[in-house]
Length: 434
Ligand code: FAD
Image (cartoon, rainbow, N blue to C red; front, top):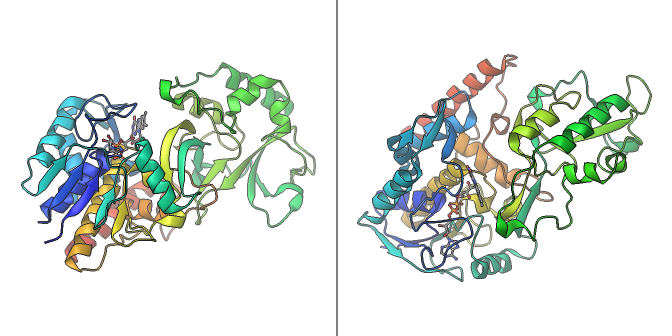
């Protein structure tokens, strides 16, 4: 019987290896630590949590809670180990990080169908393979992936503006228009008067910035200036940059506002919008506080905060199938953060699906594309259908799911309905042999 190569025993690789082995297929799992460490990992354990010990919300009232529940129902080693090593954290699922990764390591390593190779992989192997080497993929392999995907197919750092759930924008305060009315009206514009602009700039200048990791210093400002740095350049710098009002007269008044912040559609179904030119390194709590000062965004939900950090990820909309298969080589899968899913749980979820699909490929069965109504399906859909021009990694969030057929105004009720629909859709898939 053929085996599957899994490269990287992080969140995605460990989950993929577990799913494959549990399905009765042999796994060759390659992990370079401790022979070669990354700049963020400190141990040789599998599924090490490099930063926070929280796997975020655990209830069905948030999308990552739905994702976890789906994974539980599919026997995820990451989520069941997290459940078993949980520490008190209110509504979140936080873990004792050493107990958690120790448990994942033990379960995966001791599985009779898993053989572990402690070595750095520098080329993409032949045969059925899942590459899950994460945001800090070692350089030789990153080069090999870049060469395989083509020059625009692999990025090395991430400079992203916050992304907002459209259903939480106050549409009475913003207006739809493109600058100088060129092309179709495509942007949601948030107008500011002089006082609002000045208060906003003051808040930006006073807001706390996230500390940089040592290995991120040199790459950081390449070509992409954070909005807080631009604000500090001078009182009017932003007015000549992303807050430029020219050509954006407010249709309600016919006048040009003092400043305008534009929101650009971020996904094909227009449920998500990003703040144009607002890449930022502010702490997440500060982003919420300051960006909610923008007219129309007072109650906006930021589904993905702005980040600027080292992050190797591929241009998945151009390169991957929803099954996590490479479009160029059907027996090659990618999983984890490098596919443009963002976060521990999302990475593990993509490993789960890639692992199950690798098994199906070996068995000659049809591969799984989960319905978009599920959290796992909506995430796989997003990374393969977002715009390839400015693709940025994404956390799971309710804006990725298809809207409910009926409009549900109350957010809590709406999210509850989406969560229930997701689990029903998953159960149907399980009944049909997922
Ligand atoms: P990883 O978990 O990093 O696993 C990849 C594995 O591949 C590693 O074990 C690595 O040693 C191995 N590897 C790399 N190259 C090779 C090679 N050539 N050969 C063999 N093995 C190799 N997400 C959150 O949800 N919360 C956070 O707090 C958080 N903080 C983060 C902080 C930092 C500094 C970074 C970089 C990311 C953070 N993330 C966070 C994002 C992301 O969720 C994690 O990076 C997550 O670990 C990604 O899972 P993964 O399986 O894709 O990669």
